[in-house]
Length: 93
Ligand SMILES: [Zn+2]
Image 1 (cartoon, rainbow, N blue to C red):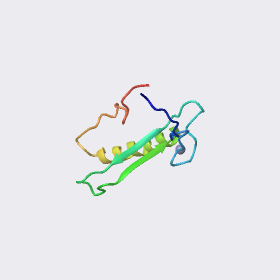
Image 2 (tube, helix red, strand yellow):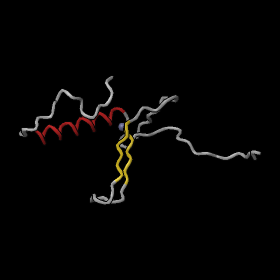
Image 3 (cartoon, rainbow, N blue to C red):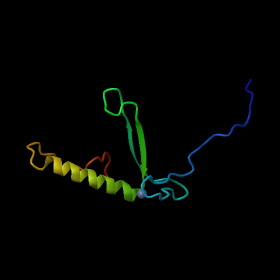
Image 4 (cartoon, rainbow, N blue to C red):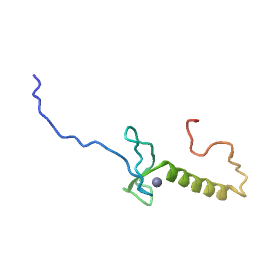
Protein backbone atom coordinates (compact mmCIF):
# COMPACT_ATOMS: atom_id res chain seq x y z
CA UNK A 1 0.00 0.00 0.00
CA UNK A 2 1.26 3.43 -0.89
CA UNK A 3 0.84 6.10 1.73
CA UNK A 4 0.72 9.45 -0.01
CA UNK A 5 1.76 12.83 1.27
CA UNK A 6 2.54 16.19 -0.29
CA UNK A 7 6.10 17.45 -0.35
CA UNK A 8 7.66 20.67 -1.50
CA UNK A 9 10.39 20.05 -4.06
CA UNK A 10 12.89 22.69 -5.16
CA UNK A 11 13.15 23.11 -8.91
CA UNK A 12 15.16 25.52 -11.02
CA UNK A 13 12.81 28.29 -12.13
CA UNK A 14 15.39 30.17 -14.21
CA UNK A 15 19.13 30.48 -14.65
CA UNK A 16 20.91 33.82 -14.40
CA UNK A 17 24.23 34.39 -16.15
CA UNK A 18 27.02 34.44 -13.55
CA UNK A 19 28.88 37.14 -15.51
CA UNK A 20 26.26 39.70 -16.60
CA UNK A 21 23.24 38.61 -14.54
CA UNK A 22 21.00 38.23 -17.61
CA UNK A 23 18.11 35.79 -17.30
CA UNK A 24 18.76 32.92 -19.72
CA UNK A 25 15.13 31.85 -19.79
CA UNK A 26 12.49 32.95 -22.29
CA UNK A 27 9.78 31.65 -19.98
CA UNK A 28 9.69 28.20 -21.56
CA UNK A 29 13.30 27.08 -21.82
CA UNK A 30 16.71 28.24 -20.65
CA UNK A 31 19.60 28.60 -23.06
CA UNK A 32 22.92 28.77 -21.27
CA UNK A 33 26.40 27.29 -21.24
CA UNK A 34 28.11 25.74 -18.25
CA UNK A 35 31.76 25.87 -17.27
CA UNK A 36 32.23 23.12 -14.72
CA UNK A 37 35.14 21.53 -12.87
CA UNK A 38 35.60 19.15 -9.96
CA UNK A 39 39.27 19.13 -8.99
CA UNK A 40 40.66 15.97 -7.51
CA UNK A 41 43.51 14.75 -5.36
CA UNK A 42 46.39 15.30 -7.79
CA UNK A 43 45.44 18.89 -8.64
CA UNK A 44 46.50 22.12 -6.97
CA UNK A 45 42.81 22.81 -6.26
CA UNK A 46 41.99 19.47 -4.63
CA UNK A 47 38.39 19.32 -3.46
CA UNK A 48 37.29 22.53 -5.19
CA UNK A 49 34.23 22.41 -7.43
CA UNK A 50 33.11 25.10 -9.83
CA UNK A 51 29.98 25.56 -11.90
CA UNK A 52 29.58 28.81 -13.83
CA UNK A 53 26.45 29.47 -15.87
CA UNK A 54 26.85 31.73 -18.89
CA UNK A 55 24.32 33.39 -21.20
CA UNK A 56 24.93 33.02 -24.94
CA UNK A 57 26.80 36.33 -25.24
CA UNK A 58 29.09 35.66 -22.27
CA UNK A 59 29.65 32.03 -23.30
CA UNK A 60 30.91 32.97 -26.75
CA UNK A 61 32.95 35.82 -25.30
CA UNK A 62 34.67 33.33 -22.96
CA UNK A 63 35.10 30.88 -25.85
CA UNK A 64 36.73 33.60 -27.97
CA UNK A 65 39.17 34.32 -25.12
CA UNK A 66 40.06 30.63 -24.82
CA UNK A 67 40.52 30.34 -28.58
CA UNK A 68 42.89 33.31 -28.50
CA UNK A 69 44.87 31.72 -25.66
CA UNK A 70 45.10 28.50 -27.63
CA UNK A 71 46.29 30.39 -30.69
CA UNK A 72 48.97 32.15 -28.60
CA UNK A 73 50.14 28.85 -27.11
CA UNK A 74 50.46 27.17 -30.50
CA UNK A 75 51.68 30.14 -32.55
CA UNK A 76 55.26 28.88 -32.91
CA UNK A 77 54.57 25.23 -32.25
CA UNK A 78 55.15 22.42 -34.69
CA UNK A 79 52.03 20.82 -33.25
CA UNK A 80 49.70 22.53 -35.65
CA UNK A 81 46.24 22.29 -34.15
CA UNK A 82 43.76 22.25 -36.99
CA UNK A 83 42.15 25.68 -36.98
CA UNK A 84 39.30 24.36 -39.11
CA UNK A 85 38.04 22.33 -36.17
CA UNK A 86 35.58 24.38 -34.13
CA UNK A 87 37.05 24.79 -30.69
CA UNK A 88 34.99 22.81 -28.18
CA UNK A 89 32.03 22.20 -30.47
CA UNK A 90 30.76 18.63 -30.33
CA UNK A 91 27.64 18.99 -32.51
CA UNK A 92 27.45 21.16 -35.62
CA UNK A 93 24.69 23.76 -35.91
ZN1 LIG B 1 26.02 36.90 -19.58
